[in-house]
Length: 68
Image (cartoon, rainbow, N blue to C red; front, side, top):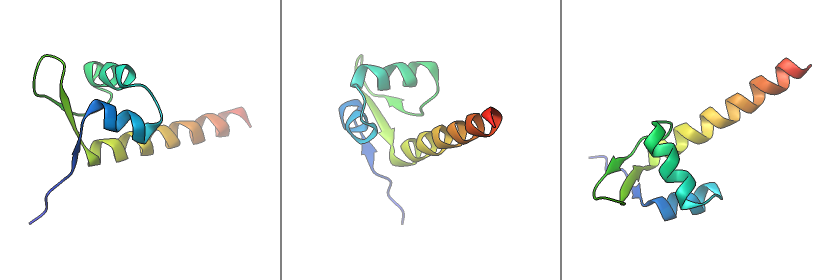
């Protein structure tokens, strides 16, 4: 059985080297997947962080290719 790890906004921010308010903004915009569990609390699956990192690295690569 597979169990996925979930992170708070503060934990996700530490992993991504950013602020927790930025993570909440990404969640509200739908850029980052997560589940709101209370008024200010979210839980973010590890797979969503991996997707965001992959999407971000692909965007940077695409931008570099366009600049050539």
